[in-house]
Image (cartoon, rainbow over all chains, first blue to last red; front, top):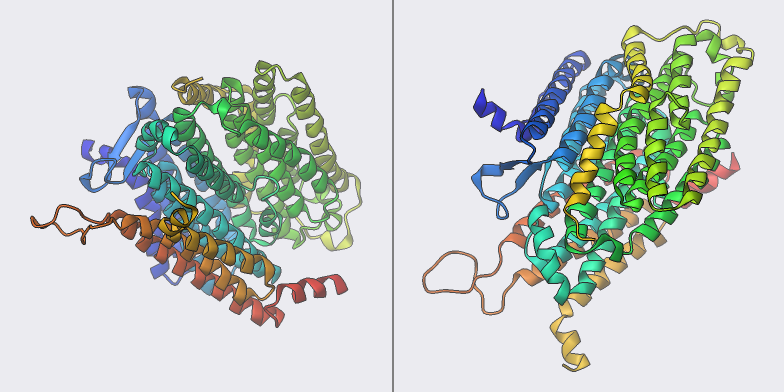
Length: 499
Length: 121
């Protein structure tokens, strides 16, 4: 067993990747789903094993691909940050997969279902790969694997506009990924290495000779990754992609895809650039802070006036990503911890919200808010879970969202920016409006006659939803996994940095 | 170093920048989805040049070990770009497949036309 234990970092990728090959060979949706469920069920155990080992030994796990020592070979390097993100992504995968069976069966033609699961597994493998790898170019390859799978998942939506949104995402996503490798290329030209750890150690000396190319590389990588994580104003692909993708794909991607890109941004900033160059002398804080604030307000405001509930939640995602990048811009212990906590909590809450909405679409066929009037009386459990996750999104005390905002506010106070705390609270009020508007229509309007036969969704959809809704409450009280680990990561990332 | 020398010794970077910006311009300026993909391809191809040109070392030979030679070209950028080419081909394939489906569903592959039709509804 010990030998298998050593190979956990690569198994994390190989399990879903191998599952993808198997599903591609099957012609039955049920068989493909079983394979996908099996792969998704193994992944969290591998991540949990990695996290436990990192915490136990207190130092990163290094896995040398094909015995080619780093920096020549590709190194998979799992430290506390990766392990935390791996666990998040694989947990979302595990929770989503029971939901997929019924949802995919109604939304995707039966002959396309095995391919749908192939794309899901490829996407999962790609996202886990971005997080596990310690090599800048390898991260690009995984980024593209997950992105290509994502374009296909979105394009399989029933509405024909799904194709258009997938195409637009493909164009913007490819520009983003290409910008990222331009940045990596410039770094390679000035340092001669692609390994993140090696890059960090060589960047300092190189900065004396090539300050301008290095800053250009930072700019290219920031813009490229920001396109992927939908940082305002590079988010225009996201609302339509989430609105027209199949319900399952939206829920899964909302919880994982942008989060893996956020991980990459944190890794580039705090494990590569900031190690070599004092973070305060990089022009990151001002730019990211302004864009984050713009996202928090403008995207929340757009969400208020959105008629389609899926797109409303998508705009809300852009706003919530604003909170996450706000913590990155603060770059102090509490701020960065808040950003990581919110990555976790937002993934849980937003997946729950999209699950609830997907269940409503499954029963009614509508995702437009006026058509869902009175749904609270027909689907009380589903709508109740929606409200719980919605309260979490607002940041009501006793929910997960409150913990994230608490950390962010503490981070802002550590900077001495009281006005920022005020802005965080103010933007949360906008979330009250858009969630409140949905709740008002769902509970206080008479249901239309066509909703008469609507009832709760099947258990396979309801249980994942309730698990996530319960997690929203649970993570509001027990912060050992989120707050505790995130603070450790934040200390670990910021600890070794020059001031 | 004169201005001419500065340009002449870095000409590969100028070609890269030209291709990159031209590709990006085509993506933004054209409404035709196939033309956009052509621009996207150009944009991606410029990166190949960015990596490959500096991998060639003056006086170096092919990176095959031989005791007669001491200077070799750097093989790593070539390997990396081989991967990037594969990624580029896959992206183009998915993009073209989407355009085929869009053409079937909308009857046009012009973005402006589709958006104009949206507003009529």
